[in-house]
Length: 348
Ligand SMILES: NC(=O)c1ccc[n+]([C@@H]2O[C@H](COP(=O)([O-])OP(=O)(O)OC[C@H]3O[C@@H](n4cnc5c(N)ncnc54)[C@H](OP(=O)(O)O)[C@@H]3O)[C@@H](O)[C@H]2O)c1
Image (cartoon, rainbow, N blue to C red; front, side, top):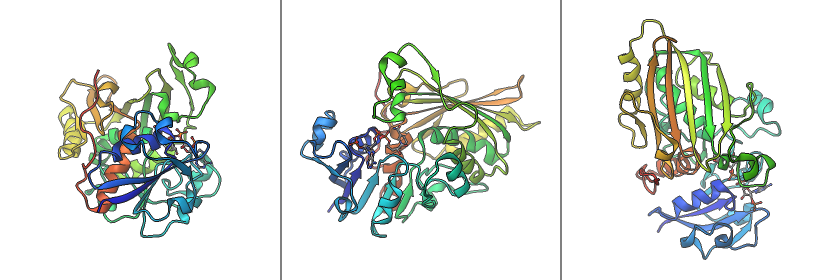
């Protein structure tokens, strides 16, 4: 018997991508898809690419429509999942793709989000290296509540954590500049996301330490061993529908060799199926990760500037959210971690 799944927020981009991955998963069956303004419509009319799920209709998002499933995936705007999740039985595996259960600090929640704080759940980034030894996947085995990371957070965390854990970069002077596609902002209509505003232009937003993903990144880097990390984080919206290219820099710990830097990243991810460090001198493009559950990265030492530079590419909708959710639920259920997840991308 396959595990039964309900996906809330199924009319959105993240929910749609969860459905795409789940439709090919051998151990899971999507039984229910819910929406808000699109409730009452056929799923196929909202997501015409999801042909194998054509029999599903979108129903209202309530605790009762989500009841009776083994797994519930919440792909809702932040603030909408906390109260709903609290109504679901403890033995149901619930994954929240929004921010409601990611932050361990209520003060950070108040400062960057506001509204009621619902507490932190097990954090769904399996490859996050912990200070000393261990990885985040250890915290996911058997979990019944999982907070899936933010998409930018995934790229920045995976790119910087190995250097923090190995002690080869200084955690107090980190920078992150990200090129991001507009699907990361969801499907609802916003003027700045119109093609006429986006095409032929690159638009910075949330500049100057105000982006909501900053406290989550710092929380993760602390898990990797940073005592007082700080990061200057600047995202730039660019005209590609999906993808994040994160260019990260950090001050090199004096006396560290280029070989020790490279070893820190290669050792951290040598046994990982989805996180790949490219050969020396190679750097990823977002197109290389399109449609795949991969995080691809290149690492360089800029000796003149005394900085390490890491370039990370992910697909925001796969490794950045839906893929991370499926990977985490596989671990939670004791399934093969890679089930239903694409290693290969779509090109060109
Ligand atoms: N997009 C990404 O790359 C990405 C990456 C990581 C995490 N996430 C997170 O995933 C969540 C969903 O993002 P998204 O990009 O899929 O957004 P989206 O495309 O705007 O979809 C939002 C979904 O939530 C539903 N919804 C809206 N308001 C609601 C409410 N008050 N109550 C219940 N349902 C409501 C919408 O239903 P209707 O359309 O029917 O109104 C839609 O199904 C967000 O928390 C986001 O931060 C997204």
